[in-house]
Image 1 (spheres, rainbow, N blue to C red):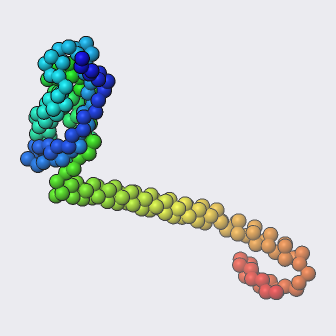
Image 2 (cartoon, helix red, strand yellow):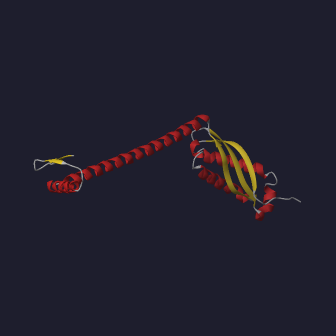
Image 3 (cartoon, one colour):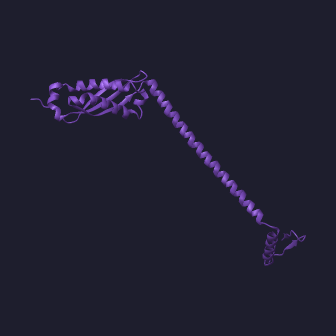
Length: 201
């Protein structure tokens, strides 16, 4: 009697994957798979208990074909999920007819060559510096626009005030001021040429 687990199993691998530019990218891989219960007899007859070796060999072949079409930086970027999906499809193409179903291929960690890793970090840092500078320039632009608006407002206010102070208004304001002084108990001397009065207390 052979007892076979048909639940999902996890096969862990650590491999060096080839990239399009010929670099070796070290990756920790997790392959989630299960045995198809409907094909259990064929599976036991054709493969048997040593199925993990077959799965890992199929993965090596599939990942080499897929990763060799991608740049190393792609494995470390948002393209990782696309690479995982392509490897998954290739493995199922080869293994499903043998009774092994691959549920997921997960590239859990990617270790790029040191030189490339440093280059990517420098590029990301440069992009962050550019974004920071753009933010600072935008803030300075907004501040400059605010100062222009404030200056225009001050100028317009002075212009409105100067246009509103006609000779007649100045004369009326002077008369009103004299009336207020007339009500004061202090002695005053008013010197005037008829146009611009001066008040001496």
